[in-house]
Length: 474
Image 1 (spheres, one colour):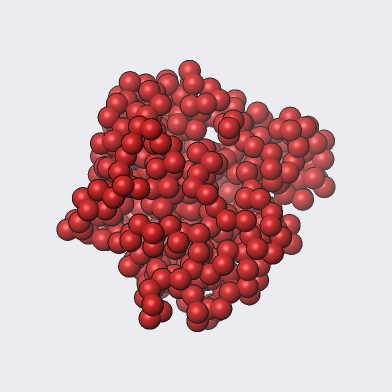
Image 2 (cartoon, rainbow, N blue to C red; image 1 turned 60 degrees about the vertical axis):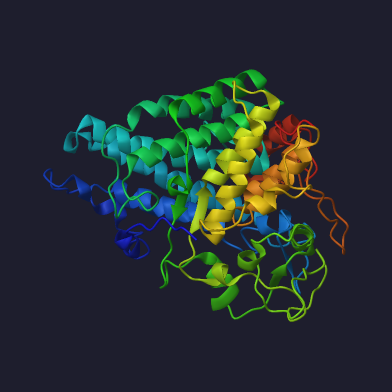
C-alpha cells in the first residue's frame, strides 16, 4: 500500500507544548519558522485527523454508523444509542475546541506576524489553514445540520446562534474558490505541515477536491451552486492519483500512534469485529480487498458479526492487521473519493463532467492499488456483472463501490448511504433503530444555549436522528 510519508518531528512536541505554545511571541525576525502559528496548525491537524480516524465509542462511532464494524459485548453504539456516552457532545466539542479554535489562533498569529514573512508565504499559510477550517466546518454541518458558525469562535459569547446549514455551505464554497489564488508561496514547511510536508501543489489539489466534495453534496438541493462549485474545482485542478491523497502518517510510538491502534491493540480489549454488512457484500463479489480490510483469523473464510448484536470475538472476522499498525496512516480525503464524485457528476450531467464509466473504473482502480499495490488485477473485478458500470442502475452500483472504498474513511461511507439511499444496510438486531440521518445536538447545548438550540431544532424540522440534512432530499 502506498503511504505518503512525511516528517513529523515537531509533532513529538505538541502534547508537552500545549500550555506554552502561546508564549512563543518573542520571535527572531530572521527566523520566521518560530512563529507560534506553525505549532497551532500542527496541533489542529493532528486533532482533526484523530477524530476522523478513531474508534473510541465515546467520541466517534462512524465505523458503526456506516456498518463496517460491529461490537462483541457493548451494543449501545451499533444500535445507535448516542446519548449514554454523550457522543454528539464529544464530537461537537473536540472539533470546535481542539481544531477550529487552534486554526483560528493560527490564522491570527500568521496575520499578526506578517512582517516576518513574504506576503506570498503568509497567503500560502492562510490557504492551508483555510482548507482545514472548511474541512472541519463541513464535518460539523454534515453531522448535525445547522450549527454555530458566524458567532461560534467568539470565546466571550457563550450563546452563539446556529447558522443555516445551506448558508454555511455557500460561504465555505466561496472561501475555497477564493483560496485557489493563494498557494503560490511557501506555506508551513515540512515538519509543521503534517499532511503534505510543505508541498503546496498538493495542498491546492486538496483544496479544489474539497470544493468538489462540497459541490456534489448539493446536486439535488442547490444545483446551481453545485454546478458552480464542481465546475470551478475541475477547472482549478483536482487530485489526479494516489500520490495526491491527503494522508496523515502516524508514528510507531505514543503519543503519536494511530488511534485505531490504541483502541484495537493497546487497550488489550476485543470489542470489535467486522460487521456482516460489509463482509457479506465483499464475499459476494470475492473482493480482493478483503485480505487487507479483514484478518485471516478463521479457517473457513470471512464471517462478519451480526450487526448490532453481541458477537463472539473468536468466531467472527477481525479487523485487518494493517489497521492494527500503530503507524497506519489516516485519510482526510483521497483520489478514490474524487473519482467517485466525478462519476456521480458525470452521471448527473453536472458542470460538463462526462464519461462516468471511466471515472468509476478509475475510482475502483485507485482503491485497489492503494490497498493492494499497482500489480493488482482490477480488470477481472470490473468485469463482474454486478460491478460493471451501467447507465441503467448507476446509482446502486456506484453507491456500493463508493461505500466499500470508504472503509477507512467511515464518515464518507455514511455520506454515501445518505446521499444514494444505498447500499442496503442492516437494521441493528437489538433495538431495530433505523440508521441515523444525523446526530442529535449535544445535551450541553440544550442546557447552556437553550434559545439558540430550540431555534435550530425548529429550523431543521426537529432534533432527531431521523431528520434529514438539507442536502439529503430523497
